[in-house]
Length: 123
Image: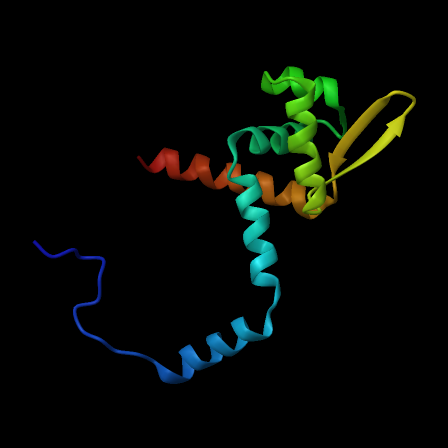
């Protein structure tokens, strides 16, 4: 039995595909965006990112407690999010507080969760 989600004939819109390919070639950001989504594809990092949408900032110890990890593990994940521009930190005495880098990151996380709720409600 053939799948219904595959074209049964080959029909390429040359103008459209050339236009899109040209845009993809211009954009060197595709690799960086891929890294961003790869970072968020880790369950622990997604939990951390989501937690940071619920609170403006959390110290590393709080994050570790929330995700059920050691402070070393939480710190490792937070540093990874920071290295990709998803999170930032500030140091206060001996404590380090993390927050999401900007509102775009918060929106991205909220949109992902809203989409998942929609998908789940269809099933």
